[in-house]
Image 1 (cartoon, rainbow, N blue to C red):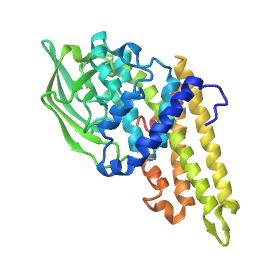
Image 2: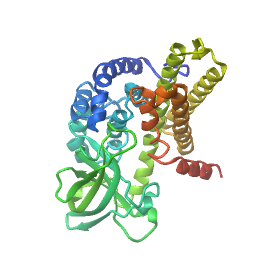
Image 3: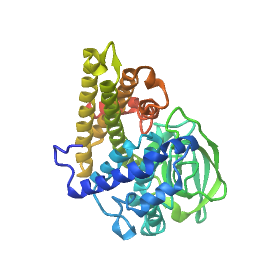
Length: 383
C-alpha cells in the first residue's frame, strides 16, 4: 500500500513486512479451521505476543514497544488481510478496544499486574459494555456495582461481548450511583475470569465473524477488591467515550483494508472469468462498477488517515473519527454487495472469500457505535 502522505516511516514498514509474513504463514492457512471452531485460539495470541505484535503502543517498562498510533494502524491493516474478519476482530479487541483503557486510566499497580501478560498474549482481554437493554446509550447501563467495605459487588448482565467466551480479563462498565447527571453514574472495573459469581451464560451464534467468540455474561454478586476500580468512580462514561475514539478509528481501518482486498479479488476474477467469448473485465458495466468501488475505498482511506492523523497528534477529532467510522463501514458493505454481485453465483458460495467478507463486515455499521449514532454525533458537532 503506497504511503503518499508520509504517515508511515521505515519502522512502520519493517513492522508491516514482518506482520504480513506472519499473517500469510501463521494465520491464513488456519482460518478455515478456526472458523469452524468458532474461536481464535489462545496460541495465536501467544505467538503474536512473543513476536511483539501485541504491544506496539504499550509502555516499554511492561514489555511494549512504546510506538505511536500508526503502528496500530499497520497492525489493523495487515490483520484485515487474513481473510477472516473474526480473527482480526478478536486480536484488535484485545490490543485496541479494551486494554488501552488500562494504559490510560490504570494505576501503577494495575498496569504492573496485568500489562505484561496482556502484551505477551497470555491474558486475553474483553470489553463488557453492551447489555440486553442498553447498547449505544451507555448512560442507560443497568449493571450495578455497590461498595461494601473494601470491595465492589457487581450484579447484572452483558451481551454481544467479543472474546467473552474465552477471555481472561474483562473491562466492565457498571452503575455506581443513582443520583446526579446520568453521565456521572458509571464506573469501570477489572474483573478476572475466575472470580466467583461471574459466568459465561451463552456462546452466541452470529451471521458472520465466526472465528470471533461472542458471549452473554452474567455477574451474580461478583466481588472484586477496591483496587479493581479502573480510573475514577463516577467517571466511567467519560473514560468510555475517550476510549471509543480509538475503537472506532481502528474499526474504520479494518473496513478499508478488507474492502481493498475484496476489490483485488474482484479484479482477479473479472480478468479470468469469461462470458460471451471474452473476459468479464472487458464489459463496460462491470468495469465502471469496479471504478466506483475503488474510488469509494480510496475516499474512505483518506478520510480514515486524516482522522488517524488528528487522533495521533492528540487533537479533538470526535467529528472526524465518527465520519471515518460511518463512511468506511458503509463503504465496506457497499463493496461487499458489489463484490458478491460481480462474482455471480460463485460470490454466494462459501469457498469464495467475498462471501465471508460480506458476512463478516456487515457487523461494522452496527458495532462500536452504529451508523445512526455516528450520524447523530456528526450532526451535533456541526449544528
